[in-house]
Length: 615
Ligand code: BGC
Image (cartoon, rainbow, N blue to C red):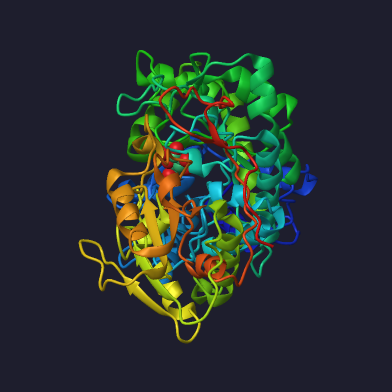
């Protein structure tokens, strides 16, 4: 093809008229679409090996910023923001400007194939300052409400697209079977059926959002497969204990416990699957040809793209990088989250192809899948996504849904006539590190990968929410952090203590003994001595050992990691909404002899499904 013909074809591809079809015409529902397949074939036929390998490469923002020209020079197919990789200033508009600038580079390559930008919007678009932050999945598991979750996912897609981002690494469909795991909160439940129902709800909502031009956000089922089944002490990462570990299970059990959500989401139309850092019976998932090629792509008929986890290809054991890359690509990984190792990945993979260790047919299959997905979501006709709705990020309408989600996700574990509050001229005491701390209220994957402490993003803490919601004549006294003495000498009508786990993400949250802190229990005792009714609210990414809190608190509420809209909790405390949440995980008494799921009857404090309803 001559240069001018090539330029012309690029223009036509970009304008969406190349094949005389409407933009976004590929079904995001994953059904074969001959039109899309023809476009993909035609494009693939024009591509050089370098262009193909470029499509298979995903670089993180911080690395590409060091050499932005590499987008063009290396034909990079995808960029991601890892947790906390935000533009400065961190505003929705600068996210949109940033993704636009990267995309501009991609569209100036020979074939002008748009890149696809990914982010972990795992509880709303949490990296973005001012975005609405929803409860983490554990809380949504307690809501048992797939329709609500669909609404959340649709809003998340909208906020993601509003910042020019096309790909969300969500939902996690992990069936978490050990509460010591630092990613327990990313999973909806220990129960496969509940994970299935809720992740289906999420996926349908995620796909229901379309831009003005009909483009959709690409969703990701992760982490394939068995990420929630790892055992304590088996981590392949020396920093961690159970995250990135081994899942020792029979194939039958793997198929019944961990595989079903993938089957469901493929039917629902999910177009990408992320591979797990974990191993199954000591064989790394990142080179598991049987599970990726035969089961996922063959048996389950998945025709979208399989993406590795962050450096997951490099982090398996193995003699050298070339062998690892050879194994991973031949096992069926289509796109490699190569992060800062992208230049190595590209040159090694090229060499593997030229020496016949990775067949060209495998490269073509990988690139075909990537292009198919790019067509299906509508990227070729709408590479920028944003069209004037950036200001909707964090809108009041979106926050209203988060408020509802918080109300539906809190679980009332115990209630000795303490909630909802009632009466006239009540005096409230509010205390505890979590009471006025947005960072603790949101948990990991918020603004930063590991989350943060304090005023990290706009919203209402529980204290703010109570202050604006209490009836006339009521008063609130806040025992601020560091303040030792409670004012006055009278009894308060209600004393509320908000205990919180410190934020964490992934293996940094692996904990042998998740439990309330001694300082929280001491505070609870102090507040109890000055209150007619004492209420303990726990912010945590999992059930924690409550020690002697049962004897100190009249009511105990598991609020999980609720997110930015504290009004959802004040609605419950003040009786504007009923408590309806039900435990998505069994709550153990102690972690001393805990072996993971199932928790023995003797060691069960509150069973799966427990939750006092105040309807
Ligand atoms: C996590 C993934 C995440 C990826 C990109 C990894 O550390 O395991 O869940 O999607 O980072 O941020």
